[in-house]
Length: 144
Image 1 (cartoon, rainbow, N blue to C red):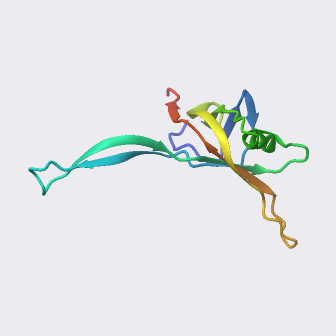
Image 2: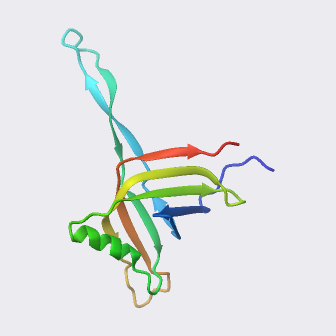
Image 3: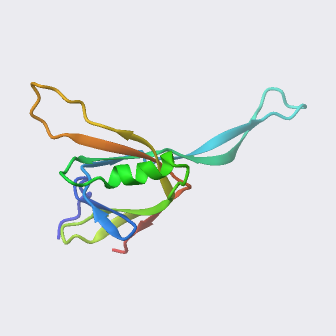
């Protein structure tokens, strides 16, 4: 078998034990904020220390299917002030459909649902997206 990087197009998303098809997953970024400290006796130097880790919101995009309103059922929970949080598992897969990298998202909930732009002269697929806030992402690599 050749040794090459894994392409980004073969992935799956699970929430609540259900595998859901998406065309794009973005925003799985984590950043450590920097705390700068300057000691009073050393005005020319600052120390940089790690601060709080901050995770970006995750955006999931997919085509609209007739009779599939799962996005909006979850979104309506937030509108009713009863947030349902879900853990997600996002996996990048190899040719045999085995996970190579797995991102586990904790306690996600929808903050934004975006509907497609409707155009009379368009012929592309209607894509909807959902933006999720969460309480952290862990990453696991499969053993070689």
